[in-house]
Image 1 (tube, one colour):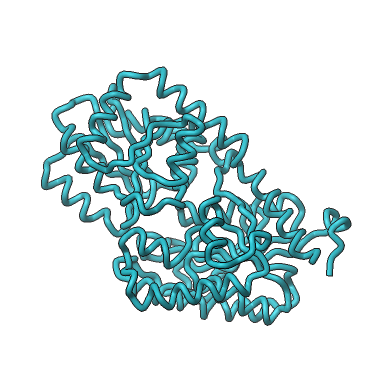
Image 2 (cartoon, helix red, strand yellow):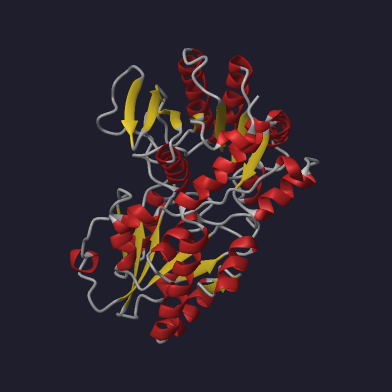
Length: 418
């Protein structure tokens, strides 16, 4: 038992459990690594158990091919890497195999770390990380916090990835509710996710929002590169998508909009990243002989800010308007570089963009409507500059991870003081 008044002087021993961690890119890896790094800077002893990096390509990253577990010290954080069966995410069965192998190998590492931690933070999805948090919490006899980036399996149904009547949805929902019940605290990343969890029957005082955010230090220290010269895009009105090219992101709307704009010589699209839908999109663009779309391979996080700063606008679609509680991390990353956005989505993300004046919002994913908006914004440079500045001020004042780590620290104090 801890006395909260005395806890500010105590080094808390924190264990993060996560399926994704740098050098993997994406919102999940950035969230946990950013929070872990700043909690370590604030004097806490922070450890992470994760897998060998393999996301999203489904191949173990170079330098991590060892067949055994691996230990690293990164940004003051102890990182323990467990063996995982690397697999692309083209099928749910293969994805589940990837999840459960990491659960088993991470549990083996965790069993050897008894009496080394005061609290566990397990970040979902996948739900298997919640299972790991619950098991280790019982073995260690310490509390655990369930970090919810997306509510599974709900988000899979909303994105059209899994059927509402499926076995995975029915039993996944039961597992999620069980883990919510067993966790000492639940920390969703958005207000609407909190509302949804409350509607499932959980008390509000068990739920604390710790938002997604941006790493201002990485933006400030990013590598400088002239992307326009690299791809011969000088003088173009450049719209950039940088992120996962998966089933929920709706990047195909960008390709179909580019098809309608292929005769407009000064408008160009940059699609940056990897994912299960990329191959099909490249084939589609090639079949249409599109000259106004450039695909760029996945980039290290240090390269992304320069890429965004080289652009005129960030274009951020979601596959449909059912994903109402999603706030894409790429939206916040764009604003951290003063880049205005076109958001093709509804829900809480739409509300934020509209409220702060950080860009233009479309509830329609019709390529003709998207085309019309792009042409309108192209001739409003002062408006775009205003959008970008509004977004930048919002994330710097509210969503810098150095601030969010303090918010998480307070939640940790509250849980330990009970």
